[in-house]
Length: 107
Image 1 (cartoon, rainbow, N blue to C red):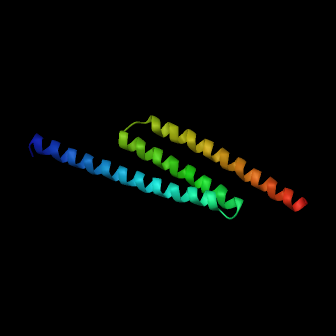
Image 2: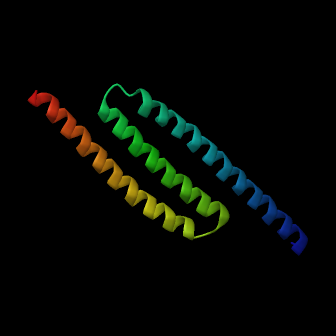
Image 3: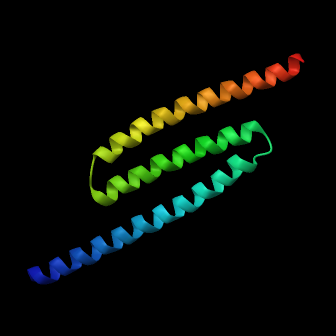
């Protein structure tokens, strides 16, 4: 195989990988919109907390996809920090919901 064909094949493979990452990112964005709707309409507070947690998880996956697409490692660091913050926010929201429910039972 001559170098020109190898270069062409590599560009074609890279283009396919970029299309895969773009499609996966678009799908994740669509799924995040669905979770936003659940967080807004959720019949219970627990549904809202779970929806916010799922949004955080999907955002971390999206950051990992961006890291793979741009071949930059610092996006993985951002994803790690974001996942820790998302976990803490979920714990705080769950405790807040629990306190509100216990306050209603006391009345």
